[in-house]
Image (cartoon, rainbow, N blue to C red; front, side, top):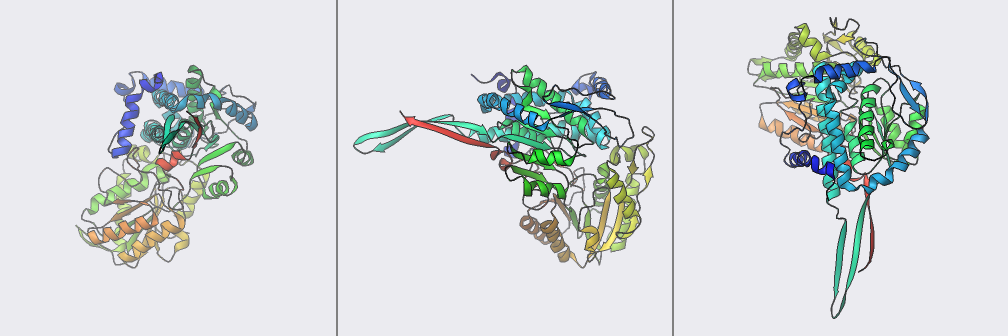
Length: 555
């Protein structure tokens, strides 16, 4: 008999499997925060649920509780005041190991069904999650809802679909018969058991605490592994809400809720000790190069899936839609104040300028026109606040101030502070754009996280392609773009993207932007350059999280 939750959600699973096979548009969870889609009272209920967390202790009933920790600071200036249980890491590990056998015994089908039920439950809490994401990360409301809830859930479902597909290739048993000529055949009965590798540690980031967390969490869980989720210290609430929902679904289905736990650590040393524990067999991480490289170098007992920093870039050689190109770039550079791992940082433009449908544009004209496009796009306060959100960290604010001071290049567009009427204490900044020469590599050849971009003057188009490839090979990138009216130039850029192993967007002028990634269709990262050693999602993202153990005997 199929597991009841597998049967309940089989249509959703089939939709995801079809989507990853065709790469066509599909989504399981509505991306618009509409009462018609989520229920008439869903917006009010979600906001009330979020507000009920403020100033409270967030109980999870986990083992090894040793105290409470809070300290999240909202980029919008809202007082959060939530405290979370600090648990002994060894207690969480022991409880996870104890929960693992029953999870394995459930089988791939049962695990998939439970994961699908969890995702459905998370989707029902989308408004609550969106408020938590918005107030801890600084994302604007619409982005917080979409990226923090349904899009994150789609990425989680995508991982479950890949996990199910890979596990479903393994039969549970086989009848093996080898002919022996005149003698009786050799006959064996063989059984195959899918076994998780061990505890998965998922380390969250401060800007996308669900979107960047759900893929690893569900890839590990669906393949038979317990999960310990260690959130970023300033984005704990979205992770805590997610873990509480997951633990509730597990308990409702007769499983130990300790299969998934939240680990709030008082310092980095504790996280390092947890990551290198012998029982931890996989680590998912999104964040800085320094800590990511530490994990890769020191977690020898575990498979590390790391998304690190990169220098995303766009080559601008020519265009036949100049205004539309500038509009697309203005949105790209402004969205969530550039606090995305996919935002373009270096725009490579030939020193002699570019040909456009509005005539030839010099390098300086491209710089000035891009600055005007950003100012025009952000001219209406309601648009600006919805798109920019707020600055998540003090470090990003410091980088903006340094860029504004001209220490990294000629200021083409200075960042401005904006007053948000709904959140007077919000830290809002418009983008800063700098002009530099290709030789000034110290300025643009490292990630400057935040709304900071460089228009880089290169000798010519061919030099731009070569520089783009070198940037990706040396420093990594999740996204690269090109604007050109010449097919041979686009072909050259395409070949460079293959060599550097980076996703390429060509002549984006409409409502699709280089820093957006669609679940089931777009691979987020290739795993082939220094920006990330894994992709959301492909078979490699799930297949190494489980092992197949066989037994055989004469039949």
